[in-house]
Image (cartoon, rainbow, N blue to C red; front, side, top):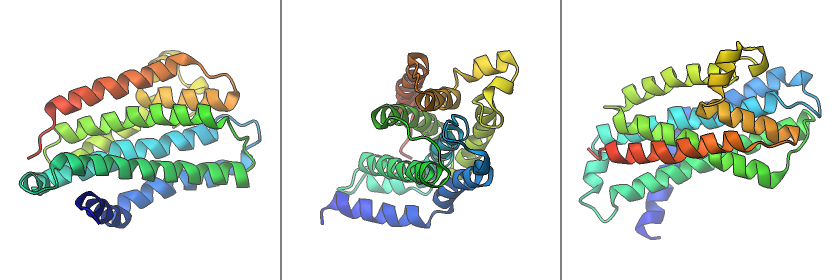
Length: 232
């Protein structure tokens, strides 16, 4: 087993033991199951909200907390003098967080479609929206990790961002019941664009604007995070 594979194995074990990973899987699923009794085949609200929440929890909470904690504990600095470069750890972490997100979303889709009777969306369109949305949310998490001084502050920033973004994005209540100005602003947030795009996928009428918004966040914030990220 080469060095990178060993690193991936170790990081996978650590992620499995991380309580935040369990919460990212179970909280959206719990909400879907509790409120899923009213779901119908044509429902385009609850499942997109749950999927958006799952991606947001990984991107805003788990990813930045993990990376900032590694820097705080000197893990990244120590890796800089070993054959495993810090960039390898960052790449492995991003991949593992992506796998966790895929698992969380797959679980939601399995329960929502297979058990609660929601309609299955087009796979290719859903995959494209998922990648754009995950890229946008991960870019926010990377920026938090770049600016936070330690794991606790990264955790705090993630939580502080999650709830207002969730509200503006229509996760706390349907966007059509929000004040018009807030609904408009929310559509240009990463969570709002993701939820709207998922809503469009289930409605069968995907629109390009939310995808463009998510792509701008993914590229723009990733570049800013790379500029300010510190290895120690």
